[in-house]
Image 1 (cartoon, rainbow, N blue to C red):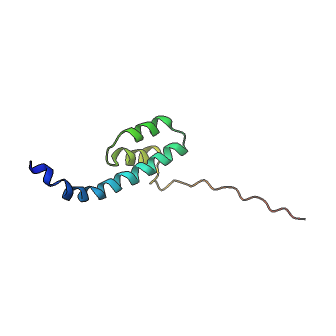
Image 2: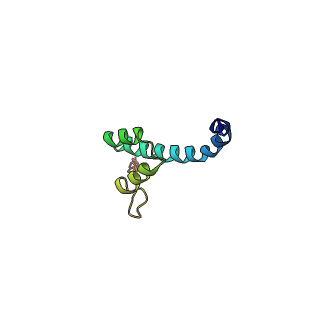
Image 3: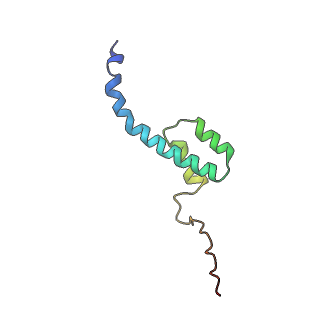
Length: 82
């Protein structure tokens, strides 16, 4: 069977795609957990779309790549003067 002979050579071609998918999935799952969005977390965890749904979630729901995104800064504790 010819398809069995090419499994080893095609496996190395899948590595970049796997890294791409895992990177976006990890970022999207981290944001969904941080924002306590359980439904989105479940959807992102179950669906394997090679990063497409993850990127759409980050762009439209989290607005990760928008110019107006401001990271929340922790307030500096006031120094006590004696």
